[in-house]
Image 1: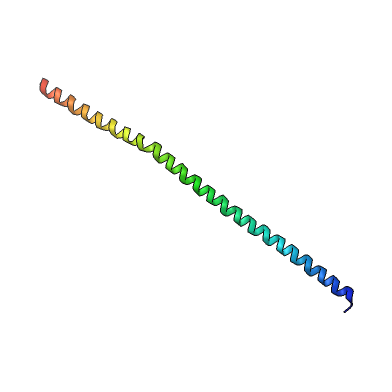
Image 2: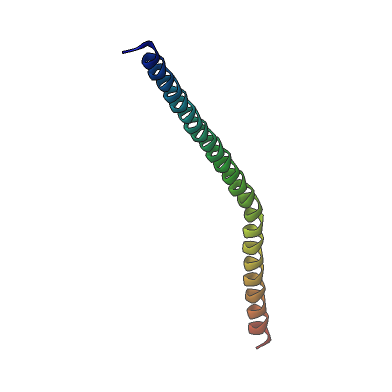
Length: 85
């Protein structure tokens, strides 16, 4: 082979290797970004769940207290009605 043929082959190999490396770097970068994005999303969901739980807990306690109060009021009302009879 002539010298020019080798230089052409070398250029093609270098260009192919550079293109391959570039695409590999891009694909790795995207996967790292996706991992970071997934991690941020999971953390956000966890924080949101904790916030909802902290808000829901007093609401549930208030509902239970209301039900207990209403039950007590019904019992007192029944007792009054029985006394009046």
